[in-house]
Image (cartoon, rainbow, N blue to C red):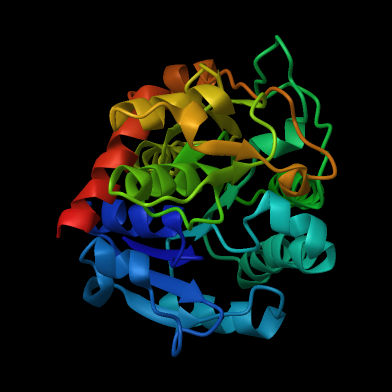
Length: 320
């Protein structure tokens, strides 16, 4: 089997590449400019030399066509595009184009080539907006509240349309928050764990954050990429929510991280209103019952486990 991972340099792309290599796949991966990208995540997982890297601009149809013709994949995993919700407010056009146009180009190439290529499309729990007390499932309505969520919702419906109209095997994975040590520090979870470890090591810095009362369903990224692979092994394409089913406030996440280092978070955290987004989801929680029943997938890591693993990884880097 041969797989093309679009956006292989990111957290999910790197973990997915490692999973696929372990299953005997020939793995191709793309970034906008493979000649200058560092592929630090692939290096940290020790698989940089095991994958074939290609340059691909997802918004350029010809570039997408070239990458697919060169890799000749059985499966394509669409993880490319702008991935930060916060950044999407500053770069809404680039976010919309990289996600929605990028997805459309992949679908069009598959349609025109008329080859039995299976496509995984990365959806997002952000599409649901605030779920409050009702965990979102595959039938829950979309109420996007950020440019990122709007783009992901558009890509979701593009995939659903091509599946119905052209009988393309495409699955949308609606993933809730999933974290790991490979997250960049612009993501709040990695910002918290890396800062907490520095403070435990003697740093006098203060951790500045926006709202602490937001509630999220946090899982472990290596488990979530396994769900992506499972979707493409089914006889029929479908859409799946991937989540732990549990949610915690950001304050709980912070308290757990600092407690792992025998610190009281209240001595080291300050609120900064400038870090708050124009619109923010209060509560996000998923119901992955369908994924358990059909894919045999269930989250093993919950929020405290995720925090522990991220703290241990940060400490290991300090002590290396």
